[in-house]
Structure formats: C-alpha cells, structure tokens
Image (cartoon, rainbow, N blue to C red; front, side, top):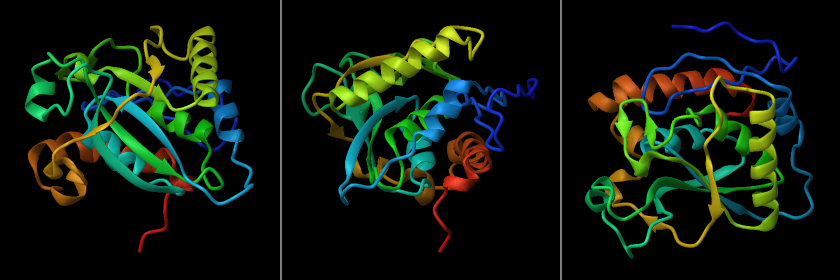
Amino acid sequence: MFSKIKNLLGLALLLTQFAACAQNDNYEKTKTFRQMNANTAKATEHKTEVATFGAGCYWCTEAQFQMLKGVSKVESGFSGGHVDNPSYREVCNGTTGHAEVCNITYDPAVISFDELLAAFWTCHDPTTLNRQGNDEGTQYRSAIFYHNDEQKQKAEQYKKKLNDEKAWANPVVTEITEFKKFYKAEDYHQNYYNDNPNQSYCKFVVGPKVDKFKKVFKDKLKTAK
C-alpha cells in the first residue's frame, strides 16, 4: 500500500518511512531531510566515531546500516536498561529496561552523523511508542543514545524540525538520551540477516525493508564486491 509521494526534498533521493519489522510503504520527505543529507562530513583527519540507534528489531537495523558507505562495523545489542549483561531472553521479557540497538562505527569523513540520522528516521516508524509493526514492547522503542554534545544537539534539533514540519501524521516520539553502556547480543544475533536470508522473519520482514532501503539510499551504498 503506497501513500502519496510528497515532493518536499526537491532532490532525486526519496527518503522512505519504514515501519520496522513490518511492511510499510509510506514515503515522507521534508526540508529537514534535505538538510540532513546536505550536511555531509568534512574530512579533517581519518578517525571513526560511533552512533547508537534503536529502531525496533535490530536484525532489520543492522542489515540496513551495514550497507552504507563509511560504516565499518555494526553490532547488535542492548542499551538504556538497568540490568548488567542482559540476555536476549531477559530483554524480550521487558523487565530490564533495555532497547534493542545497533552500535554503528563510521568514518565521519565519508558519512556524517546528519546522514546517519536521516537513515535512522527513515528506516522505521518513529511515531509509534514501544512498537514497530507486529513487534511490541519497550525493547522496540525508537531511541538515539548520543555519545557527545554534538550528537545530542543534532538529534534534538532534527526531531523538533520534523515535528514542526509534520513530517508524519503523528509526532515523532524518539527517545534521545545519553549513551552509557552497550551490551553486545549473543553471537547468533550478529550479521543475522546476511547469515540467515531464508529464515522466515528475514525473508518476509527484513528482506523487504532492506530492498526499500537500497532504493532510497542507492547513492550512499557500498559497492558490491
């Protein structure tokens, strides 16, 4: 089901709103997204930085961000809770307070934090509280765990602009909070989609989201080997 495409970017790039872990074909574009993509990184020195995003099921988030140029590593895990070293089963019970997140290591000389934010807000539905598609619970909340003041400022600035511009019919409810700890999920959760493309969840949920992400960010994808 496709919603009407709104011409708010004025660029060839279409920024797609996905409902994480569900098939949602709404296309939303605003001048804020145009600004995010225009604020490309300026190379000063070669170093990597880390962004930590929660966008629903981390199998989906991991598979999408792995494809972006400038991203060197994506790890799936948990942040934002009150229990040390939680297991996947404990997090799924909703008692630890953690969100499923991805720790994204990137080169700011190749891809900026602004561009990562654009990808973040278009790879899931940031307007649903504690739910993405059929996945429900606090562990699936939309969240940005900022690592420094600049990340905090940009995340809050763009969230406000997206709401001011009514980029979605409902307000963005993304949690923006300070990064404290990241607990890597069990090994079998890492690189899950690429290692299990024929698993039913990957085939019917992750796969379609990855295909849409490729179309939206086709100019920012790594060259296939």
